[in-house]
Amino acid sequence: MISKQKKDLIYILIAGLLLLLISLYVIDRDRPTYSEQVEILEEELSATPIVESKIQYGLPVDSFFVQEGKVKRNQNLSDILVKQNISYQQIDELVRTSTGLFDMRKMKAGNHYSLFFDKYQTDSLCYFVYEISPIDYIVYHFNDSVIAERGQKEKISVRKYASGSIESSLWNAMKEADINPVLAVELSDVYAWAIDFFGIQKGDQFKVIYEEQYVDSQSIGITQIFAAVFTHNGHDYQAYEFTQDSTGSFFDEEGNSLRKAFLKAPLRYSRISSRFSNSRMHPVLKIRRPHHGVDYAAPTGTPVLSIGDGKVVDKGYQKLGGGRFLKIKHNSVYTTVYMHLNGYAKGIGTGSFIKQGQTIGYVGSSGLATGPHLDFRVYKNGSPVDPLKIESPPVEPVKEENKEEFARTMMKYQAEFRHYEKK
Image 1 (tube, rainbow, N blue to C red):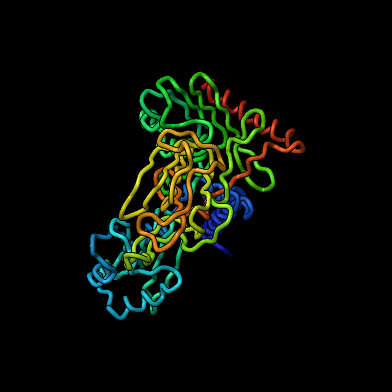
Image 2 (cartoon, helix red, strand yellow; image 1 turned 30 degrees about the vertical axis):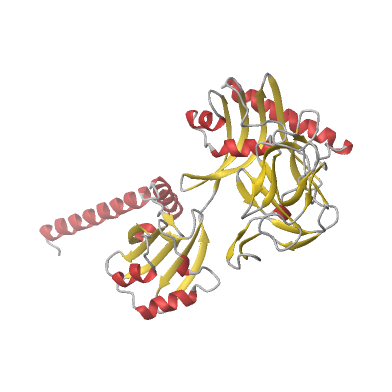
């Protein structure tokens, strides 16, 4: 027979076991299922902010200790890297690795460079980056062997609108309105044949839709002008960029080209005896110096023609240089010079207005010359350019079959002007 005390103990144990089972059941019933647990985890992850590593030159900057600098005057690659415990053997390997990518001997004073060190061993250089230009750079990996890679920074194009009124000059108007003043040069090129930008007046106005490109929040230039209106002497000169025959050019509201073409050469019958060069052996002085023109060999007395409409702004004689010469200003962008002339055409003098194809003088050998020839030079915005490489945009108007598309393009730009003007 089981005693009463033992029976009571058994009942207590059974009751405790039942309570434990009931508790486990309740807890398990309230526990989320597997799929519910996955959903909860995903919600927690989506709510957790993701911190992205800053990438520069294709490298995660946060993972390194970065030291930046500028190339100093007369400083070379060895001067920079030897101080970072890079051996001359590695530097030599670096230079050889650069072959075809960049000549490190051409590092420029003032250009930026960056040194990427191991974050935990700050005396261990991992990467050296040199900025070739505001866009291009070259990265050197210092691992078991030196590896070189060339890259480009991301360029961001921003469409912009600018407007203003002239008080003194277009350049000053741009600066006062916090507009990139390089836009003034671009506009002068668009309107080169319509407006003399040296003759613009107080009260003249402009508005323009254009694109500017940025790298690292710094402007690297005006990349395109889409449309512009320049008010000069009370007249609106409209310009709309339009592409036909795969070439873009500017046309007015009637579809006429804003440009005129130059003659291909200032002589009808000639041969080129010397080309544009930054280092040519002078035939008389026997020394190397720039020759920023094209020499056309032709018999003495051959007529010399002006390649475009313009005004004679200088006429004279250089005994130890170009001999008899003429300088013709065609517009606010282009000026041409004709040298070693034998003589001038009748009535040609400073202030004379010239028509395209008009005879202005005759081939000779005045000044420093070994024989009869014309030294012909072209200046764009005051700087010499190769006469044989002058861009020759189309001068014909918008073609009949393109007029409908041009009208739509023009109306789109006009609507865009109205949109900006309402702001």
